[in-house]
Image (cartoon, rainbow, N blue to C red; front, side):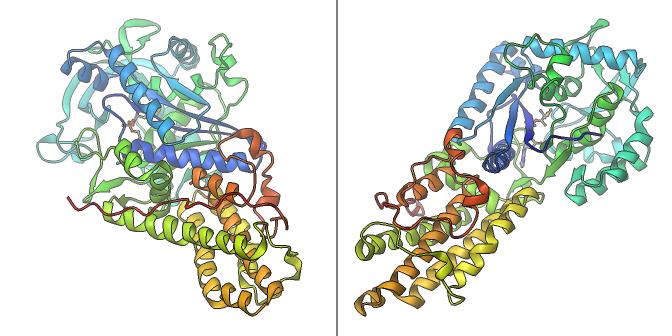
Amino acid sequence: MSCSDRHRFALTTPLYYVNARPHIGSAYTTIAADALARYQRLKGLEVLSITGTDEHGQKIQRTAEEQNRDPQELCNEISGEFNALWQKLNIHYDRYSRTTDPRHAAIVKDFFARVWDKGDIYLGQQKGWYCVACEEFKEERDLLDDRHCPMHPNKQAEWRDEANYFFRLSNYQTQLETLFEQNPDFIQPASRRNEVVNFVQQGLQDFSISRVQLDWGIPVPNDPTHTLYVWFDALLGYVTALLEPDDEPTLDNALRHWWPIDLHLIGKDILRFHAVYWPAMLMSADLPLPGRVFGHGFLTKDGTKISKTIGNTIDPNDLIDRFSADAVRYYFLKEIEFGRDGDYNEERFINIVNADLANDLGNLLNRTLKMVNKYCGSCVPDVNPADLDASFTLKTTGETLGDRVDRAYQALEFHTACNSTLALIRDCNKFIDDRAPWTLFKQGEQVELERVLYTILESARLAAYLLSPIIPTLSTAIYTQIGFEIDFDQLETLKLLAFDQHSHWGCLQANQKLGKAEPIFRRIEIRVD
Ligand code: ME8
């Protein structure tokens, strides 16, 4: 079993198919992965964040044929679009794995040889219904009327009866059952784990890992009349990503530094591949297993899964252009419990980011900074947090917030991290109205006035710090206005922001010179077309 190094953390998004431009569903997993990677970096861990594209298989071959294009040219174009989107969404990945990279073919060849030598590959006859959109054989009982696929109701499964190489998945039934029993957290959340355990208990069947009517892929090393099944090749894209730029592309070199990966973040549609097929393939190759597989829910639009194949996509580029990257990142992580399905609704999007980011957080900071400028000479008020008594309830709440949010990130409960932090900010807004600093000023209560303003400023700082994995640009703006010279996007400055210190309420130093006060997030006006 894997035993990962506590000072390092490697995580992956799925490698996305390049049959169409990225949509908000693909962005969703990547936003979550980026938030988690940023959180781990804040905690001082060395992080390797992996994403990429899955470029082989029938689905891509057909898309290229339909568009009368060279498949590689299609892959290059769409892969470029994924990359451009990640830049725009402020995603910091360390490795971008493309399965058409020649280095990847070398890794696949080495891995295939190990599984072959183990005796886990044999030639057989594959008969069954294949959904090209899923790149998966389906049981007839799982298909809808006229053999339409439940995941892609506009696509029909196709009959196949051909010689294929098979992987002996059935050999790993007991080992997989033991894995799930001994490592209850291997598959998360628990509901997904139960699904997988039930599936495995029904008895595992070998699955075919080659195709004969397919050119666009990696030839089977021992028999080039067959092409490797796209999933066999794609999962190994996670391993290829581990090669250092100068490494010779061998499996041993790839596994040297970061294996085993700590976390595979995926959507629930590809759980079986990651939680059953992949561990069995790794067991066959005698390799340690990844730490965890987390299967999140689907984004839906009017109740239907958002999908490139169905054609009901939402363009993340458009959302970012209109609302900003931070707003998009915040909405999806705060609004949808990670692990569950969630529906996208534009009115709700606007209401939430306006309420939380523009009103509660943005206005609070702006009002407070103006008062500090006016009443305290543009410096953090000269207050020792230890002198604040129990009537400063924000201090009491703030002192436990760091630990609560830390636990939420560890458990991938992004919505809890957001809600707990925003609760402190709402309390701040009430606190200002209750303590009325403007009245304290008129009454000449300078000591109390400074205590009140320090308390609010420190709470806003803490909120910005704890939300920085989700809204890095806004957090940088808040920190800058409070007088720090840091950028949450720069790894070097993160070293100055030690989690132990900055996640604690009370770390703001008295007399720090403030930056320039400016609105951090402008309210979004609802478009009336
Ligand atoms: O499955 N809601 O690629 P893919 C939430 N190439 N997440 C969604 C979503 C939705 N509506 N639609 C897609 C593949 N996703 C394979 C992976 S990995 C070695 C190979 C997310 O582009 C979700 O995480 O079809 C899904 O699992 C992922 O996009 C990949 O989708």
